[in-house]
Image 1 (cartoon, one colour):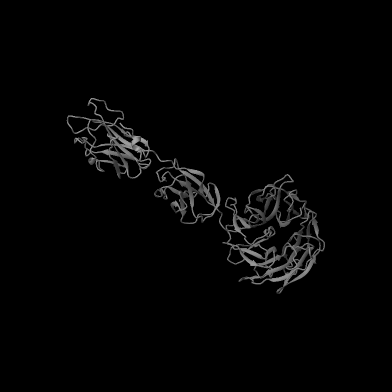
Image 2: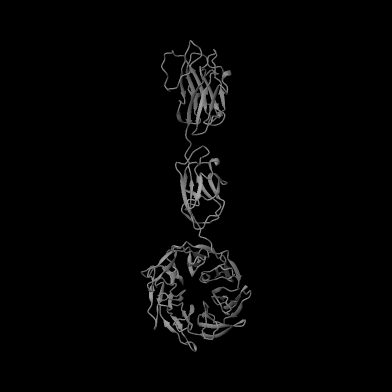
Length: 636
């Protein structure tokens, strides 16, 4: 028999070559040849011939798609007539019974005993084909097989599908994926058969195993990518599992060795819409919401120009509010300050027992007290007792009259308390001495020891060698010595407190404390919780990571589920407000972000107040933003 390789020369690449090689006759008593094929017989009653062998052998597997095929006869007769080699006398079928068209190669002088054929279309990998030679094929002498002769073989399996470590979009374990993400993709190693992509082969399921409705297709960017497109928004803060089954096939029919799954978690629910700026014309250093005119509606008050600017002097703005909303134009008063004065905070209360509301403004050289008179703001008095960075008004001694307290931003400063007597505020303050740094020191008041008396909390900002905050517990005879708290001790360390808030975080009717920290050594950020229990504030913190540098911190029920949530105003690579939503088990969902695109400075991130500013029954935020605006984040 001639070498098939010499005959393959010049045939189309990828073609399956079918050769019929008729060799010399052998006696009828010869044993069956190797290959184990069932012989065919000739119709001549005096001559019996066996088919010597075939390639591929019947039942062979992993046959190359461009392999040749031959039949070797033990026949002492001329070659079959080429006129009997037709599509119906010798043919090839795939596993579905469809014919694979063949092209015959007539014998040549050099290949006198061989006939070749090849498919007009390429065979597919991993498929079983059946070749048949019928009785219609005749020799020059008119002989033919007594019956059709068929055998089958299977082509080489196609390469298996596989994924890569970075195959998935969203990636495995990804968080904060938008609930309206355009699609979920898997990138594989081979071109895919789009007919195998459907809701049974590419699924996305929620934690309960419920499938997300959607469509499956090839990605428009690559035939290697499978795309699942949800037909509805995903649920917020939910972990979804995407799965590719073995039903997905490559264009050549390759499959995955096993199902492939990966998971991702969507972003927390949004609390606020896009920021809406209100132009003021001055940088904002403090914001507050208080019923200044005592009409039953909380007004918006702003203190502007943190640093003195002769072109834009520090001013006080009051937007009165009634049933129709905030007034379009504010009542304004310019503050007459020295060139180094920096108004920083606001407080409200009846500070002279006249049943009207006074507005206290902290300044570098003291505290100015103003009141609303008709449509004007008038100055009533000034306490010239040095620096007070943050101030508050509360009944600190339980006598039914509101007192005034302030904390210095200097490391040599104090907490000053002006108690109100029958004749108004004391002219000389009582002093408390926490260890303070030079920076954003803050002061809060609330019952953190469960005895019904107002305690004071002093936050020391800007110094990693000092405690985060000091708690002055109120007793019946005054304030006790401070208890110092530092979450990341021993001191010194790289952490510093930058914001804090008081509120009932666990729904037990007792006030707790939230403190926002920054690690100046490694740019790590967190918000920590100190719970009140047994008449004391917990000495250790339970907390969670924050996205970016955290400053102003508020505790409110932002989603109306009767559980306290936490809002934090962030500085850093971008400015935004994040809300930690509390779940029924007391844990907190990672922050839902609301950008403040107009913000330009870390100083603005210390300015945030919460109220229902548009009267729709949902809590909103007003925050300091750019050089001349207040941004409103309206609740959704």
